[in-house]
Length: 488
Image 1 (tube, rainbow, N blue to C red):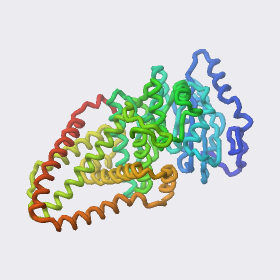
Image 2: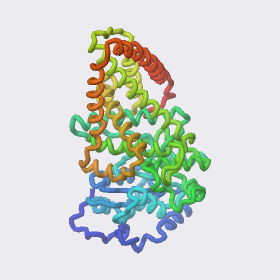
Image 3: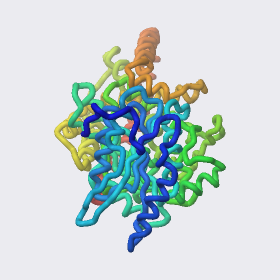
Image 4: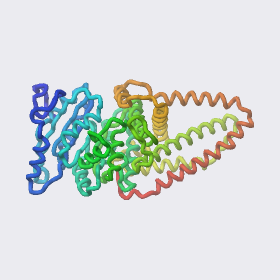
């Protein structure tokens, strides 16, 4: 990385501060488009946007990842917003022209850094600011400020989106690089997130590679498609702040405009994971809350629910699956405790079948990972890590639905930023509620007549058995399905 000891605050014409554009910003898009068009064969142009908020620890690696690509973006704009750290100073070290020779062919790109200061629209505002800078390009590449990609990721995405004019956007295959992670809890949470990403990506790949959500972490969009959705939805910008999940809403709009939303078969990127329970809770609650808003029938503020949209079918299945997981686990522990309390429990080996199938499914997921490691295999083969992580996810599920149904207006973006700074204890709410509910149920149980207790057990165990059988058959079907050679 270049040194900055003698560098003035902002003297580089490729760096702009929050007061506006530099003198050389005007017409920069036309300049590189004209230079490319002068070549014998026209190559589609790619404008890259990196919205960055307090990304001092990762922004250097992100830019370096782009500058080492086998296919360089034609221009890279780092749009820094609301930052309080050294993101601008570090990014500015890369500002300027970059020339690279690949297979005897020279490729050229320019890096611009824009500090737009306080921005009430946060990431959405940064994305739209960047869009104005690259709207003359054929494609827009969105990269988060903590995402690094495989060296051929941009080339793969460009090839795929150029191959079919019906494609409005393509997402890379996301995972998390766990090698730099330190600490037992952090490693456990990152492994769980790696499994979560792997399962989600594989689901999309097996559905004709139709991607429900073009994640902002590393996705490429057709600017033609973005212009069309702006017209059809009466928007001045592609991204709007109506939804907690701006990337999900944009994906829905692209699909509704008649374009395809895909996941790449080969392009890969490592995103930043959450290493604390507090941070993971805030992120997952925001994601789940935003998805529920899009799924729910009717109008919630400026967000219109689209329950039958094709991109939301997977969301409905995810929520149904989480509800089933919650019901079976809570029922099992309640019935087990109740049976033991009156010495009525009789063990049957048949109850070992669901955990065994779950282990097989986790193992299948682990084996589908491109860069699996020993922790992934341990997570899959031993039931308890995956089970503990499932309880963590159930807490996120309950918190998101509770927030949504309460109709309480909260800024989930701000809540996530607060959690990432190590503040807030909302993630403990599900645990507190669980303890209180269990205490009340135990108290009520011991007040019941023995006949009533027996009747509850006589009804409860068969009901749990039927639900578990259906759930187990669903897991077994996933174990047997062909992955068609895909790796996530």
